[in-house]
Image (cartoon, rainbow, N blue to C red; front, top):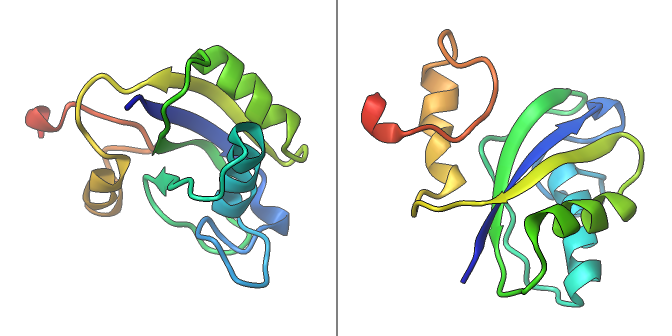
Length: 127
């Protein structure tokens, strides 16, 4: 099943963080809703490279999801953006070739913050 990497930017002013909230707006919630509308499914598992607090902005946060589709990444990016408000944007969408879950990046983002300033997928063997 294809594994898609999303490079996301957002103005966090109107968000209550990355993670889906029951009664509040979140970045993960908005993007998951957009993907669900495109593929007409409810069970999209969007995994972010880290969580953010309310009001935090991002220029390049990485997330991934798996879905079996013939749509090309560029078309998925455009389709997602067509369902998002102006304060969140998917900059790019690409296939993840290696079996590396974005969730594994939490440790790197949290504890290597002085070296890595933007969320991105890295070759973990270099650390």
